[in-house]
Image 1 (cartoon, rainbow, N blue to C red):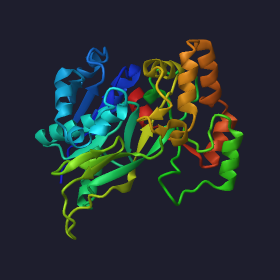
Image 2: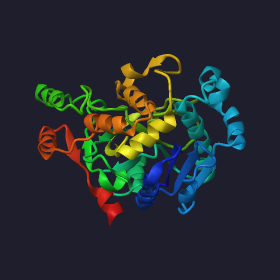
Image 3: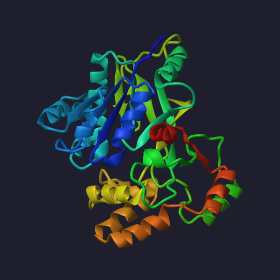
Image 4: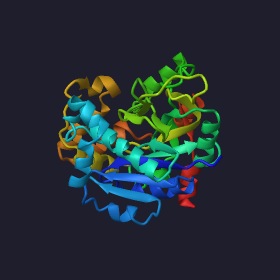
Length: 335
């Protein structure tokens, strides 16, 4: 049974990799890509208009009116009050609107990822993957994210250049780091103790049907669903048939642009969640070094904390099972 799939993304100043993001996902079979631009005058909208699968939704007065009418805004006013300061709030609202857009377009599946991520099925296309999931009656899926590891300071389009990825040990309980692997991580100054610089809890896709709602920035849920033995599984299930390739801060210019755009954000999400405790200190340290407005200092920080360009170190991490090479997206985009 043929299945159609769409992507929803909230983005702002995505940089030179946007065209590759759209080209790749169009090529693997996504029939619609909903781009919610945080800045309605973002110059990258011109790039997005070149792709027929793309639907552009700017964050203007019309969209904000729709936000106010969402289930999220109406049922969780505490959450909605952070709409102007927390990206996760705007993402959640945009996903809820994208669900309705997908339903109108008769799209079967919706995937929520960021514009610095690629969906990477182990075999075949995105429609084939989702057809297999539908056949197994799995309707709410979680995908482990692998975090890109740059091997050079200067990278423009990271989707074309980065092929080295940290494996996800957080979402797979059986893949626990061994004592040898932990020693190897401690000897590698660019790797924090918990390995990732950013999130490690994956991203999700769900079948578009009655009751589908976003559940924060990383999950979906179904509301008003009755539990019956013959109904599809709507509780989240970890899928091993695809992963998310995450390319955060790959290339100094991309790193600098991101933290200049984010500015002096607080140490806590929603005035409550300690960022450093949640994902480590790198995000806050990056903010602080870029706020000093010295590219020289920021470049030294980036080179020391992020980039691994010694072949001997890279090979030891690969042989130790901590990182891996995934070259197909790069090969396709460069070809």
